[in-house]
Length: 458
Image (cartoon, rainbow, N blue to C red; front, side, top):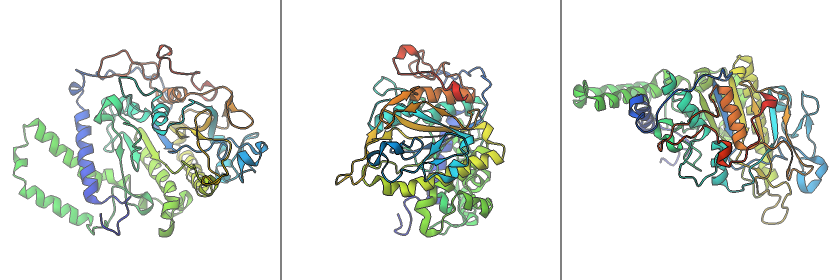
């Protein structure tokens, strides 16, 4: 890698390589006959779901519930630290972090779940559990919610988009295999790049100085030199390869690329999301990623994950919160407002959650210096749009945020509710390579803790 090149920069060479691989996988996913012998691809009956797309904001590392959406100022300094002045929202009775002034004006658009729980404190284990609804250790590696949506709302279900049906902005999570036993056809397409600098899949001039025109000229030269291509007609394998190449180039140079080009947005809107200067890129990248997610929703992409890390604050938690909370506030509040203004919020589920919360009691001693550890007993999640009601609070933690006080919500409860809003039957069959009678979310006989779907806000 060039020393001047950011590790987050996606060059055209990288994009082409990823595009070819991704497009090939997508083409292989399309013919039902290729998967029917092992997994089946039977369509589910429509449930009349209100949502068409999902934007998942994955707060990797685990954000503190007390610092964000479940403040406890009465618990004292050892629990709330300097974040001891929560603010009222535009919904009477709901208070959130003092560093969320913009979200406070949008509280009528989202609901807070203050009783998420699973009781596990391991990153890998609960990243898997929170996004699949299943415990690890079974004979099968289950797919996460994005992969399941890709199966039931992707190409096998009639999705015609050029952009893959499951996109991650910008890097895969790395804690577990998102596609699980569904395999490459449901694997997320990770864009790479830096949205704040318009280095997703597209850029007029890359760090290597290759323009769109030069890339097109190179493509034409390769075509002239390619004698193998002349034999592709009638050969299914070669035909699929060249179709993959066409799709990859479209993602870089054609209509597919336009979805990732944030320069097409008005500067005023980019500023609302948090358009950074070059010196602020690391701080405000999240807002531009939210804008990119909205553009993908406009193009009908069923599932978009924003992989938004930096929440694993074992040390100096409050210094990190001074950056992370305003960043989240501006990006998420603007996303909700922008979706609502465009008439897209009613058909788009937005959910924010990490794998767990953080210890309510602060560790002031060195070397932690005000840090918080992993905490799976109780934590918070936020859901909005796609048929979910706003301005509500589901469940409650106790006075110090240490235990669930009322209405526990387990990961499979939340995921099942999202599936239902999409018109995917949570109790319907889930195709799998062993041909087992599996359901989309766990059944009571599976022994997975559950308390029921979120009827309070559906």
